[in-house]
Image 1: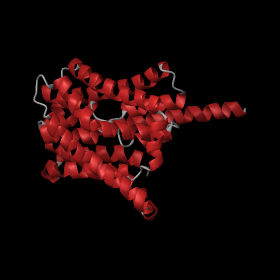
Image 2: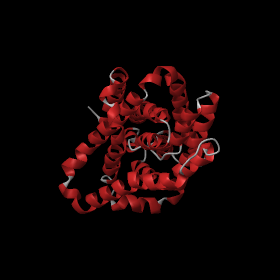
Image 3: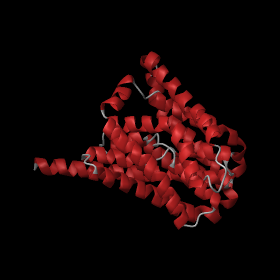
Image 4: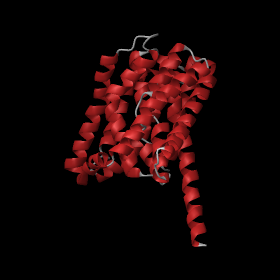
Length: 308
């Protein structure tokens, strides 16, 4: 079973389990950050020197993709949260989610959607590295007037969660890549299992409030993701990007590193703040997979029509 299919199914299953048996996973709250570190290590092990050369080769495309990522998603999160009247803690969770970098599954979704995979990897890499600065600052800009946001401490924590594991992964791939082929093949599933466990822990911690808050949060997550995908696609079209590049930017903008949002939420804010990130983890992989299927079939039909 592909990781992209196993992820949403596993996430839904563990969420249901956590609601009815919360004591099974709630004691493992402190495991969230180490689990995310495993995911970021896996990301680092996929990076090669040519990925960084690709960033330098296409600065305009990188600027467009990363700019839309950090400009649109926190703004959309804030507006959608206000529209649905989410409580303060959930609004913070939505903004924190919107201020995070591109999701680690976006590269696989981009490949399935027949987008520009090299550009996708570059955008994910750059937005992830910039998240050390942008995620805390953007969270403070949108919600800092109503709730304390420990910007400097968050920067330090994000560096530990992201930069260290990614750097270790890059170095391992550079020096020992030929000897780690099997490890790199299984790491996508290891990462998926890690994120699924994170989701389960967060749902277990908030099981008592899930039924009261699930519907408005699901609605907010739905529109946040949909508007991110749509605006990423159509704004990049206005900026003159070709079809493959538009697909890539849409996926990068619409899919967030929700695991990071969850880890930061449970570290600095009330436990319920992590709920939007947990739900987004499930939803954006479903919509991303559906969108990839639609685009892939569209390309296949065009090729078939061209041969006719």
